[in-house]
Image (spheres, rainbow, N blue to C red):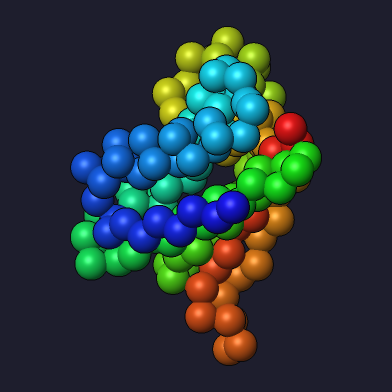
Length: 138
């Protein structure tokens, strides 16, 4: 099964996106905690795209494709912003960051802790969109 969502880069559209993803992945026998974590990871990525990559340009589009497989949930997030490979920002020491009381900066490490695999393909002459693939084993 597959869910295909396209949203404008507006923070107000995230609530509906979260609800659609939650409803879709709950069709797989997934407990609420895991489902909530997956939705949190997707929301974090999309929020960062809206704020930092698209700089609140509401005409920009984010596409989210969610696929359920027998043992995985695969999520592809597509954007046309300047490429940004989040994998370079996953290894932050969360406890140390909190101890220093530095605000922000924990979203990407959190996504890295939630998801089991993360792949990134930057747009180029042959590819129109950046594609971030998040995989959760279930």
